[in-house]
Image (cartoon, rainbow over all chains, first blue to last red; front, side, top):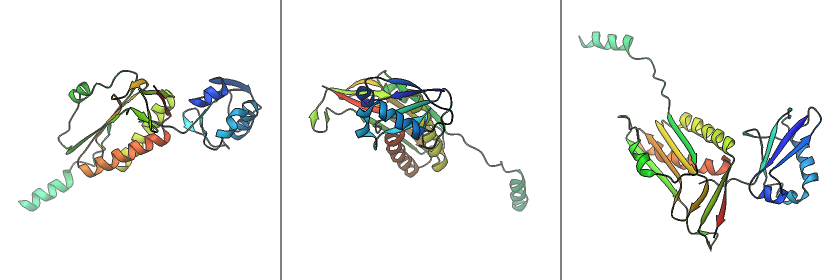
Length: 81
Length: 149
């Protein structure tokens, strides 16, 4: 199944892209996808502990199971206001 | 006579009124027009407190002079998270109205990047809810600042 990954703020600069499409096996979790993301974009690893992850428009848990067409977003701590 | 009236009131009193907080959310690249916002205010006769907060871009960031801030937003998620915050606020305080405007894009120093208005029966709940809302916004709403010189 295909899922989309979005990078926001300076994570997009570091990844040198705003989106990445990836094919995963059915039943893949957010945590497993994150492992693949950090293999593909090792430059993001230093920010891993502070990176926030959303599935759609909700904050995600590593145990969340992805579905075909899921959109995962990675971004640094937010700073509105 | 009095006891008859009291009994009638007991049986025919209005059932519990379920109030819904008015909410308005605008994430925009347009300048915040406070005059228009104040003109559009809908003040209920039960509101004893109207609280307005304006967040202004300062001309420095981390001790360095800047000309302003570019705000980046993940709009769909930001709208969803703002509405979740409004839901929680409505559950926790008797807020009658919330109106929130957040700028995105380029905002120069001296301009407002955030405008929030809360209305409540009393000041304590308005002040507490305002503090909570802005603190939570800075934790969960996906908006990022990029200072420029």
